[in-house]
Each structure stands twice: as structure tokens, then as C-alpha cells.
Length: 144
Image 1 (spheres, rainbow, N blue to C red):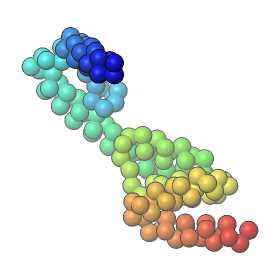
Image 2 (image 1 turned 120 degrees about the vertical axis):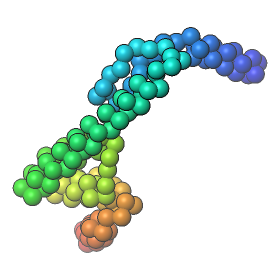
Image 3 (image 1 turned 180 degrees about the vertical axis):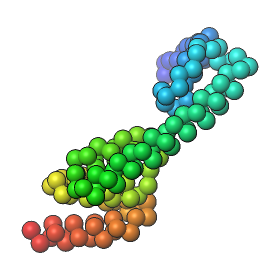
């Protein structure tokens, strides 16, 4: 019985993929491409062009949000730091320092669980400040 269901599911899936027109996106929605047949010869070129354009746009947005994060961090505006780090991470680029800054902002706002999680992620991404901050956070919890 299970084999029959599996074969039926596979047949339906294959028939759907062979007869579907698709909306072509390159990982995100910055550059929407027109509807094309999946097997159209120009579809791959359109996909590659969209991918190159969106990668450049994502990198530009990432740099913009990192600049805003650094400015907010210097001004000790912790809610803005968290917001800008989240926006920067949505661009699919990241670095350990972003997680460290978000963890520090969470710690300053009293969100110790979120801070610990961000410090651990930053530590995995080779951020030396996060290692020290994580140890200080653990010591602070022990002293309570």
C-alpha cells in the first residue's frame, strides 16, 4: 500500500513539474522576472542576470545596514542596533561582529538569553570580542 502511494505521489509530482510555467526569481524579490517556460532556452540567461543584479543589490543593502548599525552602536541606541543587524542579516551576508553587536545590545536591554545565543553564534564565526563577552555573561550569571 505504501509503495502504491509513493509511486502515485512521484507520478503526480513529475507530471506537474513537466507541465508548469514558472515565475523566475533569483533567491529574492528585488528583480522579478517575467513568466517563462521552465525549458525555454533563454530562461537560464535570465536567471543568471537576475542573480547577478540581486547579489549586487543585496551587497549594497548589507553595507548600508552595517553602516547604520555601527552608527547606532556608537550612539548606544540598542533597539536600533538590533533592528539594523536583523536587516543586514536578511541580505544573506553576515559576519561574527554583527552577531556580537546584536548580542551586546540584547544584553544592555536585559535580554540575556538572546544575548547568549548571539554571542555563541559570533564565537562560531571567529569574533574574539564575543568570546570575552560570553565568558563575562557566564560569570555574571554565576554571581547572581
